[in-house]
Amino acid sequence: MAFEGLSERLENSFKKLRAKGKLTEADVKEAMREVRLALLEADVNYKVSKEFTKKVTDRAIGADVMESLTPGQMVIKIVNEELTELMGGNEARLAIANHPPTVVMMCGLQGSGKTTHSAKLALKLKGEGHRPLLVACDVYRPAAIKQLQVVGEQVGVQVFEMGTEDPVVIAEEAVKYAKDHGNDYVIIDTAGRLHIDEALMAELTNIRGSVHPHEILLVIDAMTGQDAVNVAKSFNETLGIDGVILTKLDGDTRGGAALSVRAVTGKPIKFVGTGEKLDNLETFHPSRMASRILGMGDVLSFIEKAEMALDEKKASELEAKLAKNKFDLNDLLDQFEQIERMGSIKDTIKLIPGIGKQIKDEDIDEKAFDRFRAIIYSMTPDERAHPEIINPSRKRRIAKGCGREVEDVNKLMSQFKQMQKMMKQFGGNKGPKVSKKMRRMMQQNPEMAEKMMGNMKGQQNPFGF
Image (cartoon, rainbow, N blue to C red; front, top):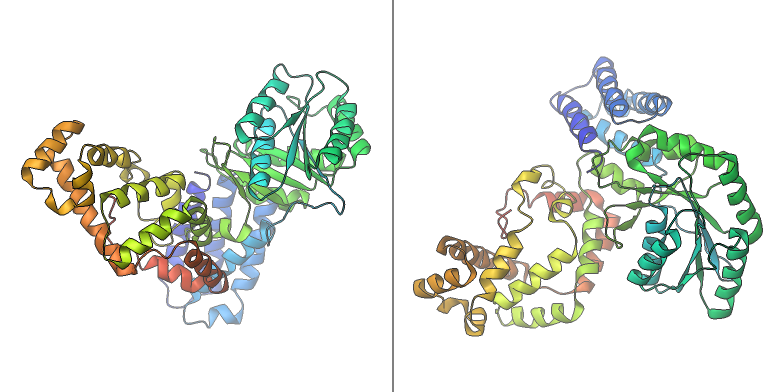
């Protein structure tokens, strides 16, 4: 994941500060020198790194910090606030037209993921109750139109295309079509180039002048590092972008682009691509990203993922069973399915404060659920509903049926019992209403939320990772 190297460097720098009962100005300046080096290694723009550490230093050597009972924590708090501000402060939302449709123009270099992220954005809008229309205006790249049609079909969104007609005409006709057919968003997938040239910019400028988009989004590949910032600056100066979609933030990238784009262009990052799947597009929250960078986790994103994965009907059924003190292996299967819907276990765990930093990727077995599922499927319906009847002879039969060892069956049963205890401890799953209440509570008091999630640190994981 992006920022791992930066997170480790910052954590090491802050350990020294936490160890000191009282800070001197020299201590702060030394720590900020290390922070600056960490930012530069993460491919953050030189000027941005210099200005950032200067702001933090000026605030950190103030009396409020020096005379604090926990000066190290105060410095970290300042770094968190300045990181959030550096990336935009608050989340930036898409513009909404007073009279639909809202026209969104996607632009970027070839290979940045523009076509795929047009579909990702359409899927996200569709999930929010909108009726988006995808428009194929890349008439030069071989199979570009077909690619948009394929991803459009996968997300269930109509694609408007007119073959290799003039892109300006296609965009104009698409907007007319959207007005006539009730589409409230028009997402125009424009052509890209391997590099910025006059022909590309002239075409984009003509499309902009023709359909007057309410939102111009630049799609940038985070893997290109500092060059991504230069691309953003060029597009903004020529075209006047409104925001950025940063792709491949799940890759092995240093992440400096995310910290530099806003400061260099003045334009916010609105979305980030976090994986190859079409639903791997997240709204960019500067405060949450700052918390992740500083190793504090991201409670709110964790809860949102859980809400999206939660099956309301099954949650109600489980609540009723728990009220009768019942939780069987069929319920455990349902829990596996809902956890898997949240995405990669590794990425999800990293969102939890106090836990994500303690668990290494190699300690997480992504295939554990598959093995557990195979064992449960080897049981009879009666055994799944009444796990207490599973004796040693049944365990041998179950193990043989799924090609595992008896020890694996024992491990599952042991972890199932832990899950039973956990469910009793939480007093039952109250479904989506509880998670939404938790989100409001955590938004109002993030420090308390971090402490609560951090208290889970050290507890044995019922799933074995």
